[in-house]
Length: 532
Image (cartoon, rainbow, N blue to C red):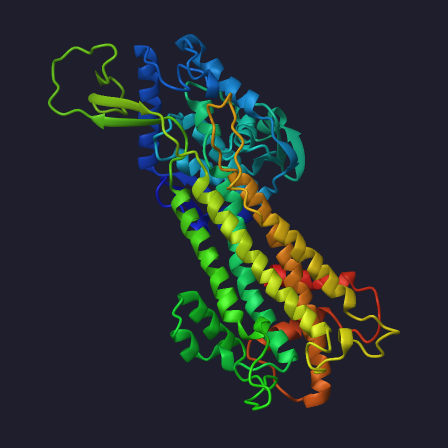
């Protein structure tokens, strides 16, 4: 993937990941010719509206509660600069470079549709930033999720006018200095441009996309860690029989059960039919039902994001239609119809500026809250398997207490389960939905907001915690496998897809014979989860 062509309508999940992470081959970004035409048309339409003295929100009026304050055409440029300066009030640590790049790309794509009124020169500068690796410093916190992600997007826009700070070649620089080093010129914003840059759901979409991508990977790791625990606990695969799941045909439950069967294919660690032990605990037996339902939430989030990637989410929007059969009539001030001398507009055109609410992040906020709960559940069931691995009474003495020899002198993995429990509790608290909260803003004009970025940031914390929980399960399960080998024989085979994970764990983490400092081993396990 050497080049990504943006037209506002066909940006994909995979393209955002490629630009965010620079893989493969650090693809560059360009606009399609159709996008250039559409952007120029809308920018010319804004200028015509100014010349005609029409009243349009954010072009010849103030913003938010100042929507009734009329701004003269002579002050329109200053108005756009002021929205960027006044709205850049975010706080907290800055987004990482990957998230910032995703934000920039998604913003370019929505503006490329040509309904926002930004000029091509301004959009080109944002693309130059992306291609040359100039990354605005964007604080994480400050968005209410309607009117979109105003504060963080204002920080994204600041360097375009030579204000604020950026990351460039590993250093934090003033925007002015970075522009000089990259041989670029700051722009002077024209009518509608500041509003176009700052209004929309871009930040929550970017964060949510990156976390949904991680969630898909973690769901697979959870299947593997669950299977390795099942092998360590002498569990049975009978509960994964496809006939069971066909009778409750949730598609991702069925898919998960098949995945578990594939992972455990050929395993000699699983229990064969035993008339005295016919079924396992829920944390083993119900993996398809729990993981499958959680994957429904992942799929829903992905569906919402794929729509949002190619949506126009700022306000107001500019609609241009060619008028047929209007020849020789004089233009009437105040009429939508006009005769154009612009090379980008039809000769006889109709312009409408319509205020709406596409900036409202409710679809994303709800999806991210749903996904947050699902990932918390994956963590919850994983922690319960860790408990079963470490509690000899729960595992019917298949494994020694706390996965250690000479218990009492050694505490073994006792505190590993504590850490998993602490992370699960944090995730439960973070799973309280942000989307059900709202605080009116802008003198109660913007009286219901989505809290979409809050939903996305909570999701990010839960994802990070889940990486550790699954790492802890793999750490414990590998220890359990080694104890079981002593009982059933060194030559017994693990499942077709649990064996490679066990080998990777043992390549980086030894069997723990006696109490030792384990934090570095935990971090090694987390690296395996993060990179698998």
